[in-house]
Length: 365
Image (cartoon, rainbow, N blue to C red; front, side):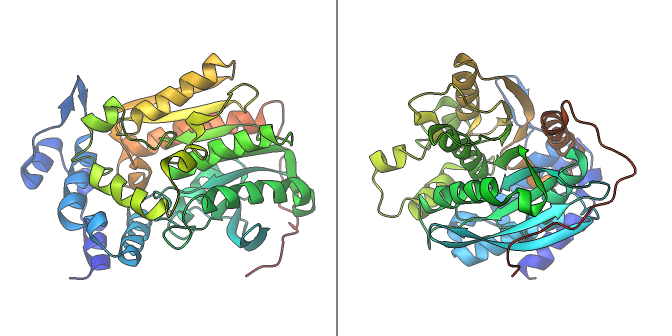
């Protein structure tokens, strides 16, 4: 049976409706309980299935990308109807950066905007796989969402992704009004590697003395990269983001960069943390990156930056993948989106009824 067929069979097989005891019997695993935290049984079952059937670090890169895209499409939230979807090509320092703009029904220009950077260890992920997730964010946060297809390794190792992220932000600052965007209400958001890019955009905007994001939503963000924290050791095996996988990501993304050079593209290594955008930091209990997310939130808070922490002890890294199949995962996502909505709409009123006007965009591809 093909990879796509296997994933579809799992997605449509009603795994979300199976009770915890039955899941434990089917997957032949004991409930995961570490330091008083109990992993959600459905996520534990998915982690076991992924580990046995789809070991990403043992696959060719293109096959891994296809698997990740298919999983996001099959397991993530169902796609919401949009008033406008536009493919964009944004000029960057290394060439055009492709992106997809989502505008939900009921909004009129100028539009609040969230710039979304997908996860995938800088090797996997794309706007196609995150299509339904970004539609969901646009619908729930009542904003336009620009999903960025930044360059991936190993074809484009670090810091290509960071350079692309900065280029997109600068382009929006200079062209956003022409696109129908309210440039005063632009947030950044991302999961895992995308969380790192969101944090870096906030830092780069401050350091360049240009308009900063009004908010940064960091979902189980990578902020350090050394993988030497206690959580990285506790959850190094059996919880999707295994050490073998993080080593695989690092081997592809580092390129010829030394550890010292990689140091400069890790948000936790910033010289200062004051003056950054208010943040919502979402962490998962069974995540090797748990400590990285909490440490970064503490650095922001200590520097006087308003921070809201969403700590989900029963979740694991990558739970966005399962928001259409695991109710708790979708609830965690919706809680994060609620923070984003508050940041974008505080002090503003949505006039109703409203219809989207034409949005001027760069050359479509």
